[in-house]
Image (tube, rainbow over all chains, first blue to last red; front, side, top):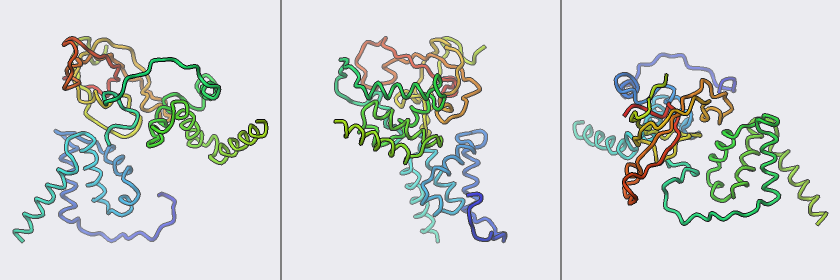
Amino acid sequence: MGGLDGDPIDFAEHDAEPWQKMITAIRSALGDEPRRLMRVDELRRAIEDLDERDYNGLPYFERWAEAMINLMEEKELLTRDEVTARMDEIRNRTRGTA
Amino acid sequence: MMRRVHDIGGLPAGPVDPSHHPEADWELLATAVSGAIGPNGAGLICVHERRRMTEDLGEDYDRLAYFERAIVATARLMVEKGVLTQEEIEGRMAEIAARRGNRA
Amino acid sequence: MTTYNIGDRVRVATAHPPGHRRVPYYIRGKTGEIERYCGAFPNPEELAYGFDGHPDRPLYRVRFMQGDIWPDYKGPAGDSVDLEIQEHWLSPA
């Protein structure tokens, strides 16, 4: 979108949320040594391949998460159903301890 | 989802009809156009680009016959590369259809 | 000097990236044996998008046993199928 009309940029620093750090950690766990399941170029491509609604509707780290799920499916390592089932499991567990 | 529309190796299917039929004039013309704009002609497209665009036809892939796929894919490549616009292609098709209609 | 020699066991990547890919669905993730080296050729997966496809990629003819590909294969045990596959889809098996 370089060169397109846009609003002013908000330069205010904000601390990364724990879940945002977690997404970054998952990216490292998947992409770095020793696993090397995904390259950063693949992640970028998968982010660019999100449909317009997701790309424009999702914040930065959620795009990463969506793209990583798509990549894991492409490589037959995980299915989206497995990921969402695990999300539900964790959601239920944390709700119980809250 | 993972398997693209052209990639049908191993899927259940009926028997193959190996009989040959002579090509229609428009099929020969489609081949001639491909040759004229290919690497040994104007050098505008290569076979790999046309294969890619054919695979990208999606739902149209199963609806179209072999040479029709090639024609649609080639036209889309010409638009992608900025050689022709969709309007130019459709305008010329309408012109030719009108001319043939007048003669018939 | 090539990465793989005749007789080497190789595995085709289990990957389904979008775009023009020259390895059919049914052979991805399967293991076969190098039958011959065919030479090095521009990468058609790049040529398909108007890039020059260089550097050239080594191309191998890989022999797979039909029984390894189709779970319900009923033909003779020695039946095989050869596919020509470029090196970037292969890893040692």
